[in-house]
Every structure is written in structure tokens, then in C-alpha cells.
Image (cartoon, rainbow, N blue to C red; front, side, top):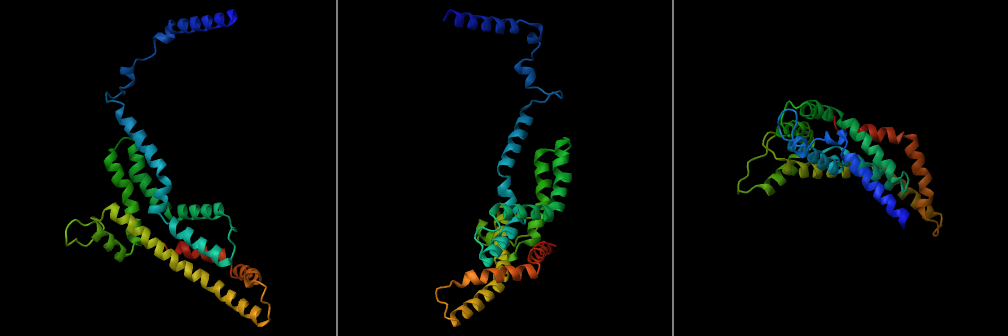
Length: 252
């Protein structure tokens, strides 16, 4: 116990001696830390940091809502269901493929957002509000180019406060109207593409089921026999290249 008491006394003495050193005396105070070189308070940087953390936290949701990710992942999910493979390819493979295809399609939009908004903001040549408008402008143009006018009009009517809403235009449409309309449009297109993907596999299932029933093999599940034929058919037509190429071209 005495040894432990001596150790605590030595630690306290060392800490007090460290505070008394010239280096410790040069530690800046709180007032100096809250001031930047230009005389402006550090609250601006704190607000930027909080905004950056907030954007990073909602980045996955923004990626799904405002990009081409939804169409890719729905099409790949329909493909896996049509093949009859519930876990092949794995979810991580489909999500990764959809993610990289999204980066490929959205590369011009990301470049414009960086050059027009993010880069000038980091160089402190524009304000945060102006940067937000410049960053959202490329995404707005992308969504307007691919949204259905019917969906856009529906959400504009729902968001209108008067009885006679004006027709939405590219300059006047709000993000709270554009984003859900774009998501509904992408869901519709994804299901349309999924129908075209599943249809050939459904025909193969029907043909195999008819053959199995005509042969009297009542206890043999037709899906087991149809699976290798569907996989072979998908390989022979070079399905992955055909599907991915068609999905990418649908955005241009």
C-alpha cells in the first residue's frame, strides 16, 4: 500500500512539473483557439464539419435516391429470381456490381458537382449556400432527364398548397417533389426491365414442366431440371454483358 501511495504521489508531481514547463506555458488559450487567422470565428469550420458528417451519414440514402442505383439493383434481383438461384450471386456481389455501375453512369454528374461546388467550397471562393445549389444542380438535371412527367406532376399536385398547382418546370421544381418522383419512375422502369428478364426463364420453366408432366414424373420438381437449362441459356447469350450493357445504355 505504501508503494502504491508513492507511485500516485510521483505521478501527481510529474504532472504538476509538466504544467510548469515553458512548453506548457505556451499552450494557446481557448480564446485563441476559437479565432482563425482571418479574424473570423471557428464556428464556420465547426458548422462545415457537422454538415460534412451529416452528409456522410446519409450518403447511402442519397446514393439510392438520386442516382441510377435503384434500376441496377432491381434488374439484378429479377435476374437472380428468374434463374431460380436464391443466393447466387450473393447479395454483396449484386450490390457491389450495382454500385460500380452507378459510379460509371454517374461519373459526369459527380465530376460536375465536384468542379462546380465542392472544389470552390474547399478553396473558400463560394459560400455554403451557393455550393449547395451548385452541387445539387447536376443531380437535378440527371433526375429531370429520367423522371416520368406523370410522376412529377403527381407529386407536384400532392405538394401544392393551392387548388391549381402550376405545371412543374426544370427551374421551379423542388427537391422534395423531384426526388420521390424520380424514385417512383426508377422503380417502374426497374420492374419493366425485370419483366423482360424473367419472361424467357418463365418460358423455359413452362416447357420443362410440360415435359416432366407428360413423362409421368410427378415427384420430380420441374425447377431442378430447368435450372441447368436456364443457366446454359444465360451463358450462351452472354447474358451479363447483354444485361449490363442494356442497363447502361438506358441512361444515355
